Image (cartoon, rainbow, N blue to C red; front, top):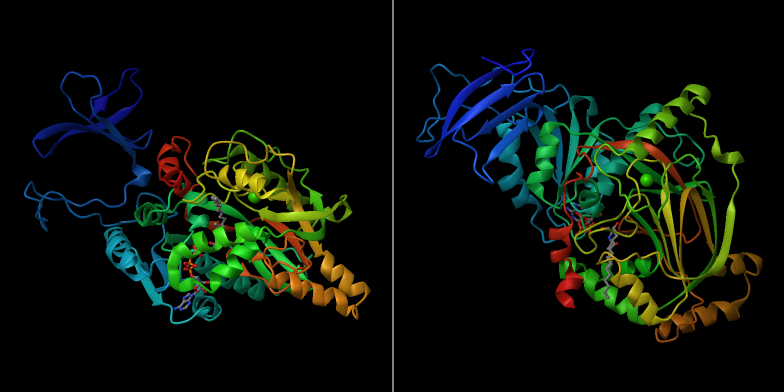
Length: 502
Ligand SMILES: Nc1ncnc2c1ncn2[C@@H]1O[C@H](COP(=O)(O)OP(=O)(O)OP(=O)(O)O)[C@@H](O)[C@H]1O
Ligand SMILES: CCCCCCCCCCCCC/C=C/[C@@H](O)[C@H](CO)NC(=O)CCCCC
Ligand SMILES: [Ca+2]
């Protein structure tokens, strides 16, 4: 035991042989750090490493020849979860064997299961047999048995698990999801995402990398990242929840076309993206939204949402105060609505940055994970060349909002009606208009567009073009901690697909 300068703190010190080198190891209980360093006089760039004890996943004794010893002075930890209280012990795992490059099962078995077993976590594993298997199953299982749910797959698989958990929570609390104004019950069981999909936007935007081992470690350590969720309704009917992108126009059309090309795997988005870009359709409609007033941030901020984000913390406090004051009742009904009519190439509503390997800073780089707001991005009708300039800025550091045809707003609720459905409502028998709509759909080179687009809701197509959206602050939680400050974007940019193309 060693006395530190200042005489107050005590720490345990020992030496550890690692390979040919002998390291000095210290356990600083007060700061919660296990540190090891080369005891020889310090050289430039000498290794000096530490790990917070809260992030140690397992302790085992091995001999120098790496064989495990079952008896002796040191024993395997009696309480493997002794480091922190918030670590999961029992998990429910859903694997989509067909997501992305169809590697989900292999990724889980080879990279994740061994780490869970090392950390003494038991897992009940369900390999899904059809779409909605995981979602339906979550309404039936004894959920109280588990400390978390893990999905192995892409954004679509995450969405299924999220719908299962949030839906189950509302059902158990007697809340009607069809009521767009109903305050929803928070979902406290955390979801872990092992990325094995085509875009993996939710994982990338909440962890900073799309890597199964990193995600498995966040689950084991028991990290917790609250997440905003938007509810989407049409005529008092619940349609979907969204956490990443709700996109009409460009991203809706890319998705619709890409669904026919699922056999292409992740490449389908490049194919359909290019095809949709060439078609250059714009859509007319009316947007109404309530600007977010409670939050400190703005979509044009230079700083992004990072681990321990103070903008999100502030929103959490406001949420708690609001709940104290008026229970679960929403206050925003009295707030003003802003209305915009126009012709748009893309209408994107994003709850988070939507960063992914294709776009390392995402659709809205300053969006926050848990501030109770979404960023509404309006890309008005412009030339093909200008739209290309806009898209290319998603892949580099230039500001994608610095265009005269792009507007961005931070909102807490949003509504959209297409011109076509407005016109149809006022004159349902106007067959000429419907015919013209058909004509233009059949001639993609014709940019004057009368037909509707469809909404892309976290990678799934919605049936209705008229929607009503409301952001629910921190409705759910992930096994993640947000993107860490010292995570440089350099690696991500050097891998961005567009940079390889140019
Ligand atoms: N066994 C299964 N057979 C067919 N479809 C499935 C099965 N399990 C899940 N699904 C569905 O597959 C859809 C896509 O899966 P997933 O999100 O994992 O991959 P992806 O679409 O390639 O990736 P991303 O969503 O990141 O673009 C999900 O919406 C899910 O509902
Ligand atoms: C000419 C070169 C221009 C290159 C432009 C690249 C811009 C990439 C932006 C990517 C934004 C992804 C937003 C995430 C959406 C997910 O919820 C959804 C489900 O996984 N993915 C898609 O809809 C898949 C959407 C894929 C779009 C390409
Ligand atoms: Ca948000």
